[in-house]
Image (cartoon, rainbow, N blue to C red; front, side):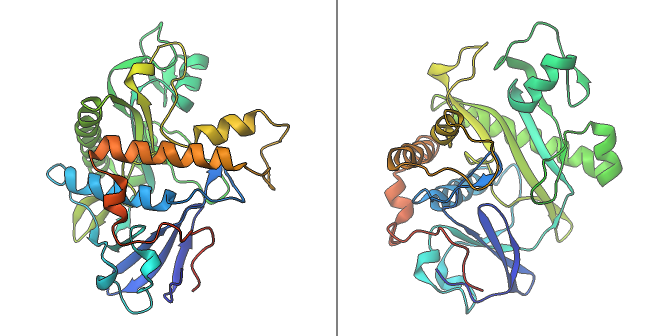
Length: 306
């Protein structure tokens, strides 16, 4: 997989290239991270699932929020990015002035929100009703921003006052309103398909003076999706993501620092199946339809050549 465009940023999963004329090329690889460590093995088609789901949600929720997508067609990509293996995992987008906060919405008590509630009875500094259990549904969805940490560090949960210091009162109110509306629409769509959207993270930015949703959107990497049939407050339901990898690693004598232990083929296969199941249940489409003419046998384990 070759991209002959300037590299702007290389993350755990995505590589961002400058496509010129105020545009970026976002390439989702099949790399997999767990406990903030990138695994040596890739999950085939993971990048295509993330891109396909993001594109689905961008279109499905277009009436709720504008987005930054220009095209996913390789024919529309600039010279230097015509490699057919980019198809299905790549978006040409407008460059946005990104907000310096993660816009997180929680509908259920899980993850860092649960840990803070368990210790202090608050979530992102806000008091919550007493007696809530792990995975309980919250009385209503809540907007809980965090900082954007530098690579290798963890995001920090912050309260609304701190978020307002970072983006300003007016922009924070817009981001909060937009994030809650996006979450509500997505949660309703997922619930109709037997899936609970426990929480999700939106990346918002400004394009031509308009607040838009950008980067990835409502994927298993940015959201906590639970099968409704397996939801039982007091326990953590299985999720449509890399849970097989976490379970495997938790069973090993590993200190969660590089280098990671190897992942067996059965773990990789189970993880791939989770991602594809999420795509097909949420979109009502076959994953093969999204693959189209792409060659799923072409992995994207390495960063594109620049």
